[in-house]
Image 1 (cartoon, rainbow, N blue to C red):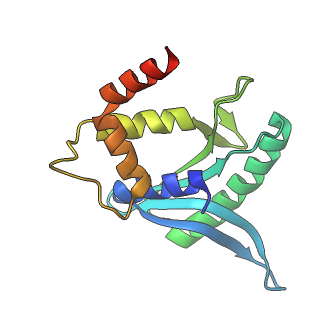
Image 2 (image 1 turned 90 degrees about the horizontal axis):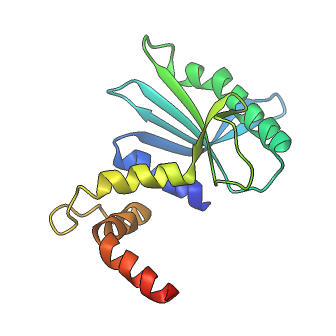
Image 3 (image 1 turned 120 degrees about the vertical axis):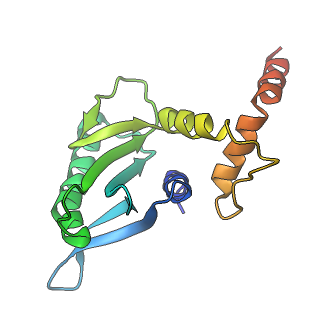
Length: 166
């Protein structure tokens, strides 16, 4: 399982979303599919649908744009069909990417750019408020549990990192 896909899956499941990975959409006459969506998360109480396309590639921005455009167009075409046209269904599409040497736009391929550093900040910020000795993240989400420990022990980790550099 690809790291960013697993991280996104775990985080959205932890937040109460139903999550599907590698969702094939657009069945063709020959049995193939038009496109594969990496992570789709749905929160039934909020009627919030998130379509995430994680990418660790180092492609030039024009190629990234084409890649994400293909994925997000397929998501727009098929996700409403799959989840119905429920009133108030909000679909959020995000390209989850690493920070790069060049400035990325706020949107790419029709979706919002979400930097890995922003996702980590959100996750660690929320988990820092939860003491692992009283409310440990369940073991089914090992990446999120690891970030909970990192958030809880951030002072010691920062100190160890500083000592290592000295």
